[in-house]
Length: 470
Length: 40
Image: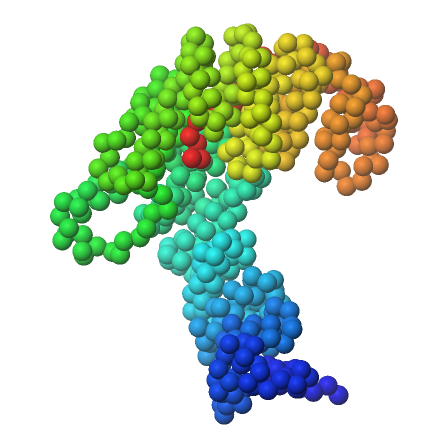
């Protein structure tokens, strides 16, 4: 017969095992011994906080999460839930992966629909601590259990989920866009600005130009409204006092305003509407007229000035004004962060108009070697474009070995990002130059194509010793 | 059966001449991105 386990009996048991007095435990945990006595022996005992339990676990040489399975009794008393106990408890459970305890408490909480607000608090605590992945199940629970789909916490949960699920998998990113899109206009203005910027950025990597345009238009419009409000409030400070509490923006307002123009221009350019695109580039080239510019704002204005110069070069190169190439190269040398998108433009133009850029590739060789390992979805997307253009450039020059190596490299990157359009392009490029591929390159290609395609690769045994031999 | 179909697809792909057209010309230009400041 085992003894009946309870939180306090277990602590007492371990104290005896270690031969610790309350004074000793107090010394080790930093909790006053008198207070410890009330926690363990009071009648009724005082509630133990999760922080105190963690401190006791550390003092008694136990792992984080010790006795969490018994902590539920501290969270519920006479059928009532203690919000101040249960929120930190669930946050800790999520942080250290005690899913068993989480499930137990969450299912008890959901017996009362009002407790959805507690789950939202847990999710927000986790999100704010940078534990986005851990916050996901809590936001999902809010979405599933909140009856009012216009309630702020429901809409915020949709938004947080959209942000938390953004990664380098194009398909998952697209699913997240579709799921979140209907709720964007219900968000408070500050979050709506960020949401529109994120939506436009994700759609950029997905090459959904009409959607990039739509979100960029909304972004400009909303940034303009917020700007006008801000100016109005500054001119009449008293009129703003009755308005809702100020909510901080993630970025300076000029960022949303400028990005609304930049993304619109980019979307137009990528649809071949160069003249229209130029007008939008001109609009963000000089934002110094913005009235509410602090030091951060001024630095952002400077960035837009720089991007406008760079994107003007891009438009020039695209329309055949290749004589600006030396200026563009000098610009890239002065602004190393712009080298990746810049080289895509230069290679694309070289491939189209047939001039050599070997000297450019050599000049930026060291920088190019650092393109690998991009984690940011936009940079990764640019990297894929760079590899593809480089492959085409080398193949056009008859450098079969290097060209096919770049092709396979681009294929692998596209596969990682689940970018099927690019995957197909690279595959077509490889097949078109198959006669120049070495056996090793054919095997690598075959491995990439087979990856994840079948459960049992023996199904493909009939292919024999490799592609091109069928 | 699956094996035969795939084998056929590979053979047809190789012999139909669809790959003999310039792959570079066939590449879809509208899926190329090279823009400064996106995500910044």
